Image (cartoon, rainbow, N blue to C red; front, side):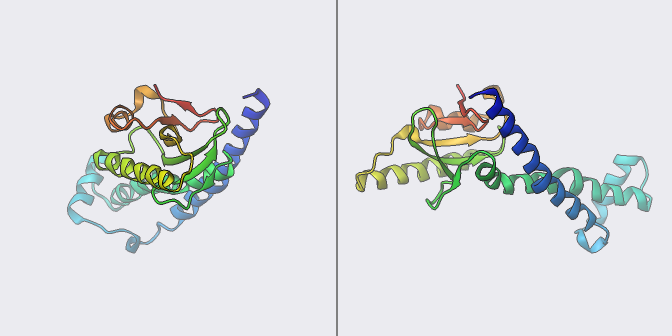
Length: 194
C-alpha cells in the first residue's frame, strides 16, 4: 500500500473517530447530571469514593459514580458498537447479511471475498466465542458447498481491529490452531497474525 493511501486512510480514521466516537462520548457524558442515571449501590459507592479520594463526601461519591462511566464502560461500549460502521466508512468493507458474519470485503491480495467476524481488540473474545465463531464459519462453508459456491476455509476470518500477535489471548489462538481459521489484524494492510 502506498504512503498517500495510508495517509488518506489515517485521516479518514481520525475524522471518523472525532465524529462518531468523541461527539457521542461528550453527549453521553453530559447526560450524567442526575442521580437517576445511575443504579447506585450505597455500600460500594461509599467504599469506592473512599478508595478514590480518601473520603466519602458527596463530591467523592459523585466522582466514584461518574468516572467509570465517562472513562471506562461508556466509551468502550460505544467504540465496540461502532466498529462495523468504522470498517464500512473507513476501510471500504460492507456489512454482511450472513448469520455470524459482521463484514465482507474483497481481499486486495488474492481478489477473493472474505467473510469476517470482527473483534475490537486482542482480549475481546472468550471460550464460548471460539465455538460460536467456528460454528458460524462452518455453516457458511457447508452452505457454500451445497450451493456450489467457491468459498475457501481461508476466506472465513476473524478480524481484530488493534493489537499484534503477542497480545492475542489464548482463545484467538485456538481459532487458528484448533479450527484453522485465520485471525487478521484489520489495519489498513490486513496483516495475518502469525
